[in-house]
Amino acid sequence: MCASKRAHIISDLFDPNRGSEFQVPQVAIAALARCHAGPILLWTTRRGSNQRHIQTWLSQRGLDHRVELRLVDMKRADAEGHHATSWHFLLDLTDLYRQAAGGIRPGEFVWKSGQANILFNLVALLWLRCDILGPLTGLERPWFGKTKGITGRFRRRYALYAAVLGVARQLLGIAHHWGRFRFVVAATSHDLLAMPVALQSMSVHHPEVDVEELIARVQGSPDCRPSELTRGARLLWAGALIERKNPLLALEIFARALARHPEAQAKMIGTGPLNSTVETALAAHDSSIRGRLTLQEFVSRSEFIVLLDQIDILLVTSVREANSVLVLEALAAGVTVVSTGVSGMLDTVGRSGYLFKIGGEGLVDRALYGLDAAIRFGAKVPPKQSLMQEHKLQRDRLVRMIEEALK
Image (tube, rainbow, N blue to C red; front, side, top):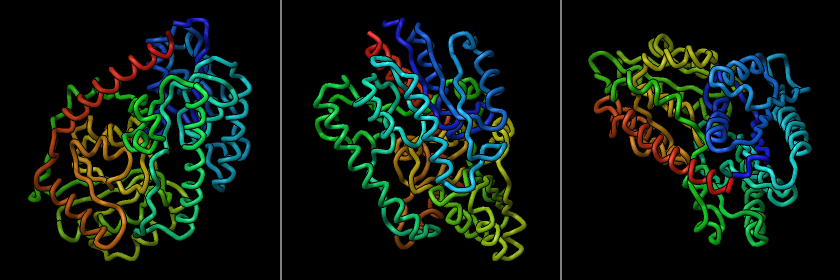
């Protein structure tokens, strides 16, 4: 099992006390600890109190002596880890990747979690000569259509992103031709389909989100909580206030839904560059909407889990979303999810909730149709059942993959 080899987990941001993308590295840590007897190094950025949160999380699971924490300061961020611009953030991530790459030896194992998986993993494959365990994400074909709340600047950035991915896919084919790896792991089914044809036969689809802790909570949650119009549906949107998450679209959908259903309540949780834009958009609605649609900053993960028990429906409006812990947390709480039909949402929400096509005319109407169905009928498949199926698929795939890699 190559117990002497070190395994490196590299995560852009990791904080067990927060939700969504901050949780992703947990799957790598838990899986590698089960299957790999060698040293495990965890590389991530320092953000607020995350060092203490990570060390507590490791200690509670008896992993504090197995995992060596390597924190890299974000020199261009404030005390809480927030950046003035995305370029400052990217420069700080470059520092993280450079230091991590300097600590990796040829032949060791690397699990990369975060937005730049494909680019970093290609460097590891081609130049560092490492085995890649973590799923490659971001390979799916970008979506370019028009939609509400998305500016031309965002579309231009997305076009550049698509061009970089095109080059990355070619390099992935070259790496395969040179025999740099035995298999490839895709984060979503769309990532898998977007790989070069030669790679698809040797690829595994495995989301990089762990559901171990969610399953422990599932036993006490209801199968689902279908709303009743007579008592009013409780709606939620949560995420960073950035264009990719499209909070302005969520605001419009919620405003229309609240106008239709006078007893419904909606909440939007998040912070980010679009804070003032979202607040201005909400202020433009009449008082009957503003009184039932509240904006709130991010809460801790423990507070968020409690909040989910008071929610009927989660709305996702992202134009790209690989694997969302937020969605899995909602399923564990028995919440019905209504989402744009993009990337990883097709895999998770597609089984249980309602999807609507992003972009083009009638976008808000399509989303409202999904919300109305969720309000009237609840989930198509009980969220708890859907989550249990996802857990079994993940655990079986992941253990087989790592055992094969570590032979």
